Image (spheres, helix red, strand yellow):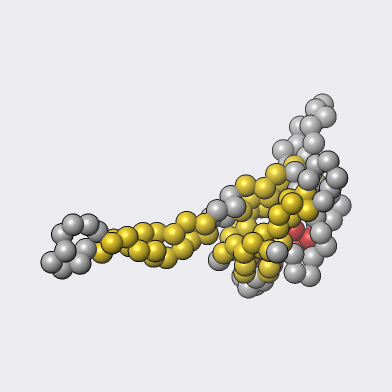
Length: 128
């Protein structure tokens, strides 16, 4: 993430793009309907990790929630489990946090405290 240290997440979901279809029927040609690409929309990406001393994600969310326009490029890299080598990398364009969820805390349990941050963005690029 721009100007942020690297973070490790246990779960990433919502890496998706969807292009609307625009249907057009040409006058005099009733044999079929043209289907053309329309507007492409990006889904929100959700990142989950164990709570850490590093509080930069929450601070970023707080800035945006106060109305500060703080758009960043966010790089997500999938690593192989065997040798920790990068498998594939994506970049979220003009990303900003739109939701933060803190951990559920319950005395007497040994569950890992998980925080979740949801990022809105305008698109995903595959990074070579």
